[in-house]
Image (cartoon, rainbow, N blue to C red; front, top):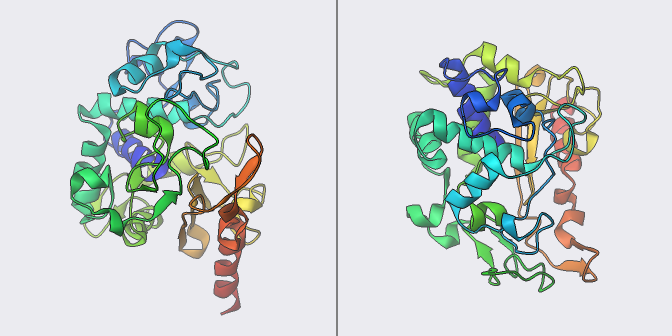
Length: 327
């Protein structure tokens, strides 16, 4: 979702001259002010260096920021994102991965495009490329459940270990797994909610290898792609949104064979992409590793699927590179 919806949208908007990532966010979202918000640039969100907490559990009354931040309503959640969520670190102090950054970037796309995020990416990016199996909220758009991989056995309860208002307890299939996206943002969020097939993702991966175009459609310029995938001076594993293989610092993601130019991202439910221009190679691994038994006690537990070979991204990525390099 972060890369193939939000980042694609942002790269398109930058290419069209509608967005400058070096401007403060409040230039585009005027209500984003107070408590240091005016100093935060769009770029800070893209590099996870704005100082936001890793997560705010809007869907739970017992979230660590208090009941004021409880929201199972999309408009309320967006208002909290724009005016409420506190910073936990100074600007550019460190890179701290945060869902909040991409939730806000999703709101930014909506404001700049004048459309809901799903309508914008589906209508302006996927449909022009002829892609019909990539979307938000697929069950609301005519896709049946049995066409979609399940993502957790007992809803969002971690095998009955977690409960909150309106918690789903049945097998999750066809609804976004991420609780903030599902409960607090109606299934459409900048950080989570996108469903796709490997085939449709392969076209988007080819857009990246082609440096912005596919067939006769140009989604963004090569210059903007370069801006987004170039390493940050503070940490070479960060581009703008994209993560980078760099000097083998992220072997667990990219494996040991990826070129220093390789970039990509992971997804919590068990997905990973690697785009490696040096080899003209794109690897997309889609698993439902979280749809597996949960081992451990009430507080310390893990999904068995994350211990499968397919749950160790770098392992599978390495096998693909080895097959390529050996032949």
